[in-house]
Image 1: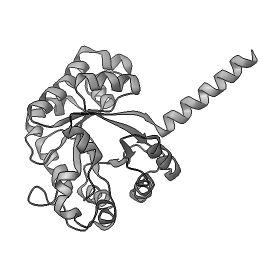
Image 2: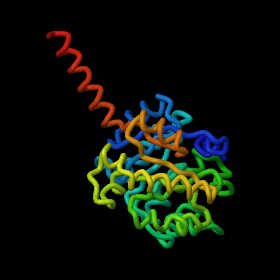
Image 3: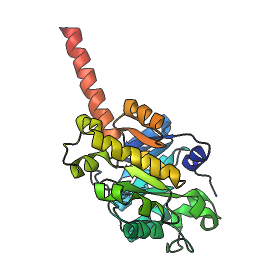
Length: 257
């Protein structure tokens, strides 16, 4: 089976850089993959019209490189989790997981027996991963649950005890809302928010799991890597297009002044 570059990095103690795909545009998916990200995360939860079918097409575009295709699910739905894994996703990120039971549902859908209940039918995954995909998929694919509420933070020890879970992925915006804060830089500097993020790192390390953080860009990613987080996204397709467009217009305005 094709080795998972992200899990290789983690085994070596190295963090992974991720690009975030929110448009579902296959050309942008291919461009981002060729840029050299370790992973491109396809956002089925908040992406613009990003259906399961679009996710498959984006995975096919990403697969023209050695960048790892990862999907942020729309919800903790076993049907969709198995669908994207069968289509070749090498990692899934499951949103708004707050309890041990919800974690067991996510992991069960992502892992073959005896760890989980994923059904065998890896259609495109056999083409991407190799003919021995089924024998090694539990080891090479990964499932991360999103920690986005104080309920989840308070349940971290129980969540971490679920066999087959690979790690946590902090969703800082919803975590801020859970604390009664307005999402953004000020919320992330709030001591309560910072303490919750640090707890994610500490519990992950104590249980041999991988802590990941959504981040807000390369500067925060560098800080989070230093803190101990092992994967951050450093920019989205829509955000980078918007920022580059605004910068170009500002530059032209300044030159004409």
